[in-house]
Image (cartoon, rainbow, N blue to C red):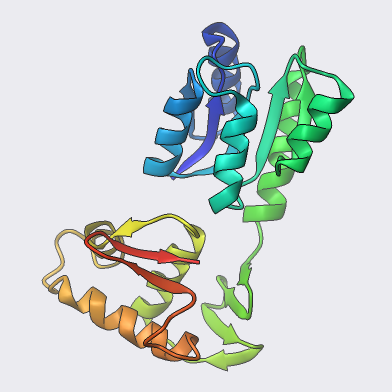
Length: 220
C-alpha cells in the first residue's frame, strides 16, 4: 500500500511535492489525471490521497466522491480553486481538508504528519465492535478478549489495515505465510473460516470478512 497518492496534473508541482514527501520518509506515487489516480488507488491502495480539483478528464470532485463511496481513506484537496462553494463542495463530498494553491509545503507536511499520527500511529485498530491491540497482540470483540493464534492475528491485522481493499488469496498467503512456506494455500481458507467463527454473529453470512469470488477477500 502506498503512503501518499498525489493526483496532480501539473508534473512540475507534483514532482516537487513528491520529492519533499520522499525526503520525509513517505512512499509516494504521482498520478497525472483522475482516471490514473483511481486505477492506482484501486490496485495499490493508499493511506492518504492528495487531490487536485482541476484535472484532465474527470475532475477532482468526482475522484473524491468515488473514493469516499467505498473507502474511508483520508483525502486532502489541494486546489487553486479557493471559493467558498468549492471548499464546501469538497468537504461535503468527504474530503478531510482543503488547501489553496499556492501553499506552504511545511504546512502541508504538518497536516500529513498529523493525519498519519492520528490515523496510523495508534497501537490499536478499532472497527465497529472489533478492537485489535497491535502492541499486545490481543483481539477484543465487544470489549471481551478473544483468543487467536499467531497466524489468525496477523491475517486479521493485515486485512483491517487494508480495510475496503480486495486482497487476493495469493497476496494474503504470501504476506502471512511467506512465499517459501511449506503450507498449502488452502490453509488460508481454513484461517478465514476460524476468524469468521470468532468475529461474526453468523459465520455463514459474514459482515466483516467478505468473500470476493474468484479473487480473495475484503474486510468491511
